[in-house]
Image (tube, rainbow, N blue to C red):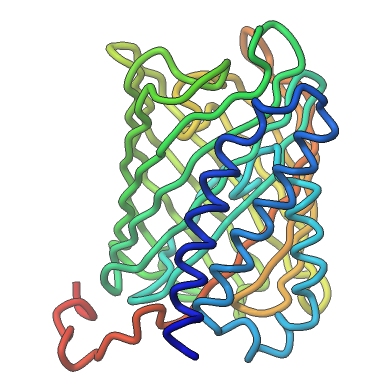
Length: 315
């Protein structure tokens, strides 16, 4: 039975992923294409959760799993994996996995960023993902996709509450692959330094800072961000940030903007976000948008023996 289930999940995941990438051009109706994309995207994440089997054992996650799948269906044609742009000085941890998906909607487009991360070692994290969306105007092919986005992130120093901040460095690339308006014209690369200060215990007040550079071909721009997260009641947090540029956008969004919203932490392994943002400066200045995000963390994905992989726990 277990072998049959493994084969079903592997085949089903591959088929659904291919359909999620290619079904939209078959349908010219925006409502039909968006609905199919959302349903198939939700099924992909469900199969992955079934494979790992951890969600069903977590009471908090079990209660909100239907809601999470519903949000995936609605939010599929948008920015998946944030929506908070300022990154923190943390990694997912050794042998742990993470899925982020987020929706970003403005008056011209829907964007969906999907990211999957895996802890190669205690301090080193690998992330891969893609962006797809529906462009409302200016492009003959309205549906667009680009990827993969590839990133390595290393935790230099872990933050200590009421003491020194955490420090992490990240670097990645975005190839000029895909179709439609989201496809970049040239190879992109980025790198940034992330700082996280834990001002109060139990992460009740976090302050994040980023400083980096984004390159497209021979053209470069500096990126930075300042953000905060304040725990106000149980798992409810208020979040806010001011950013200039987005490392993942391949210089397509280099203006300054603010973003604010709420985040609910059902557990350390499951959270939902809802935000509103608007441009502050730049030419062109970023449009106002709303965003929604989902984050799921899977513990011990490959069940590696820490005694055999002792060096991975230390690096």
